[in-house]
Length: 491
Image (cartoon, rainbow, N blue to C red; front, side, top):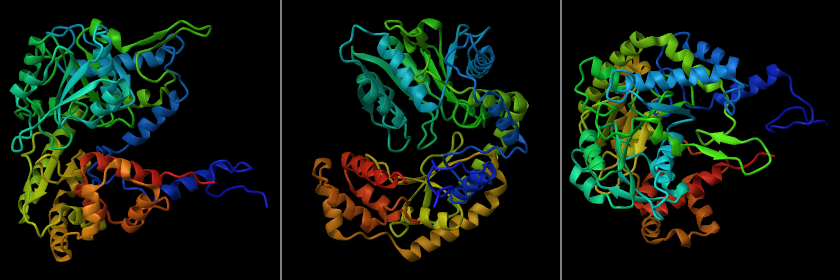
C-alpha cells in the first residue's frame, strides 16, 4: 500500500494542501492556548482584533526575502533600520539625547541578543586570554548559555532574598581585570523586579567595563508604564555607563516570534558583534548576527505590528496590562497561605506559599486542570519555589475569573496534600552525581514519573518535586535526559 499521509513528514506521495493544514490544526489542538488570557508564559497576546491577520500577511510578503545580503533586499534593510530606530528612541537614544549615535541589529530573540552582547564585549578585548562576565543570579539563563558557547567565565552575584536584587557593592567586588561585561536586568524574568541599573552601570564605568541592560522582557513595557505614571527607575541609555540594551519585540511589542533588538550606544561598541570572513573562494561573508540566512518574515511582521499599533496603541495596552497585574496581585493576596514574592513592578506577578500544607507544584497542576497555565519556578539558593505569571493585555478580561479559580485550586491542593516521593528516591536524588546516571537508571526514574513515550505527563508536580530535591548540576542533567526522552524521531 502506498503511503500518502500519516505522522511521517515525508510521505511517498505528496498530500493535498488542505489535508496537511487539517493535520497541523489537529496537532495544534493539543497545545496550550496562545490566545484568551489563560496562558501566563511563553506567548504574548494583546487581544487586538485583526492583529494576527495583519502580522501573518506581512510575514507572508517577506517570508522568502533573505537577510543575508541587504543590498539584494533593501526592503528588509529599511524595515530593520526602522525597528532599531523605534527601539532606540523608546529606550533613551537617538537625536537630541545623551546617546545620539545608538545603532543596533534585529535578532531572532532574546537569547541571540544576549549571546551577541557577550560576544561583542569579549571580542572587544582580544588581549584577554580568559574573559569574564559579571551577572546577578537573577539574570537570564541565556547569559550562562552565552558564557558556555563563547568560553567566557561567568561570575554570579547573589541577590538579596527580600529585595531579589543584587547589592551594588557585590557587583563591584565581582569585577576583575578580566571582566568584559557587567549585566543588569530590567526587569529580571523570574520575579519581575528591576535591578539598580544606574548604580551598576556606574561601578562598571568606573572599572572601564561595558554594562549591558537585559530589557528583553521589559524594554517594550517599562517605557509605557513610566508614561502612565509608574515609578520606573532609570534603566536605559539615559543612564551614563549603559553601553548596550536588548529588548524583545515578540514580547510586549506583541510581534510574532522571533524578533528581538540589540542596541549599542555607538557604532564602535557594536563593531565586534559582526563576523566577517573572506579567506575562502566563495562570497565574502559578513553577518551582524549569528545567522547568515534570515527570513524577512519575522522582521516584516514586527514592522507591521509596530506601524499598526503606534504609540497610542501601546500606551493603551500598557494601561490594560497594568490594571490586570494589579487585579492578579489582589487575587494572590486574597488566598490564605499564598504571598507575593515581590510587589509587582512591571508585568510579572510572582508568588510563593508559606503554608507547608499547600504544595505549589500541586497548585500549578490544579490550575492547569482548570485551564490556567502558569510557570512553576524551583527553589534556589535560599529563594523559595514560586509561581510566575507573565501578564499581557489579553489577561485583563480574565482577571475576575482567576481569583475564584486560584482559591479553588489552592483548596484542592491542600486537600490532595504535598507530593510525597519514596524516601529512597529522594535519597538517590540527593546523593547522585550527574556522572553516575546510567541509561537504566534514567529510564527507571522517567517511568516512575510518567515520562517517556513522546509526551509529558498531565501532572508535573512529582517531576518538579524530584528536580527540586536534586542539586543544581544533577537537576540540569535530569532535565536534559527527560527532555531527550520526549524528543524522539517518528519514522
